[in-house]
Amino acid sequence: IHLVNVVEGGGKTPVLRAEEYREIGYRLVIYPISAWTASIKAIQELPDDATLEDASEAAIAMLQGVAWIPRPFSAPSQEIRAHLQAVWKALAPEQRVVRGLYAGGTLAHEAALILEPFLGPVATTLTPGSAGRHSVVDLGSDEFTLGRAHPMLDSSLRVQAIHQAAREHHVGVLLLDVVLGHGAAADPAGDVAPAIEAARAEARDRGRGLAVVTSVIGTA
Image 1 (tube, rainbow, N blue to C red):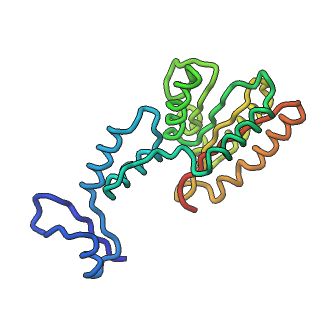
Image 2 (image 1 turned 180 degrees about the vertical axis):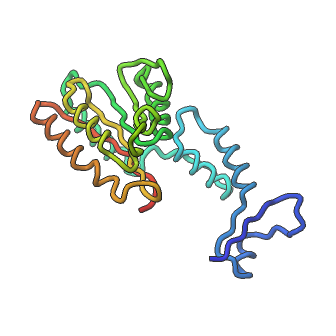
Image 3 (image 1 turned 90 degrees about the horizontal axis):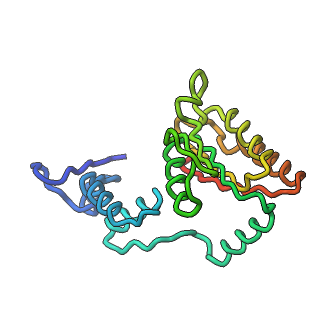
């Protein structure tokens, strides 16, 4: 693959349009300054509850010269609403606590930022001394990885935490992340899927539901 990294401004090499680079044989063209500028501007204009995905899509829209339109879900809103209603009905009255068990700190931090405006204070390992009924745990932080592999490689600690959450009568929602690609386990989803199935089965046996929301990122 022929790649050209175009640094705009101040250089002697003329800056061409992507189509012109393709005509002379380049397959991939990078404009880092434009991309960086667009990303900063897009982030500045995002609402406070925007996600990392929102920031990426807003930056791409800005580079394409089109307006960014927030898209909460890819599925139709009626379908999402019906699914949420079914999940809510399966939960027992006391199941009002959200527990986040993340392998990485980035999505853990994002989850806490999104949850707090809706649920109030969230206890998180990312902020020492934080307290709250709901909790988000970064299992990749130093306190959990001392003497053991990172949870992106070794899911055993998270599997234990998933089973523990199923036994707690007040936990109704589990938030997880699955990271694919280099530096991750060969089958990170397969490593936690049996634990999720067992946890939901245990919750059902106890007359409760257990909703599991997973963010899957990366490429296999």
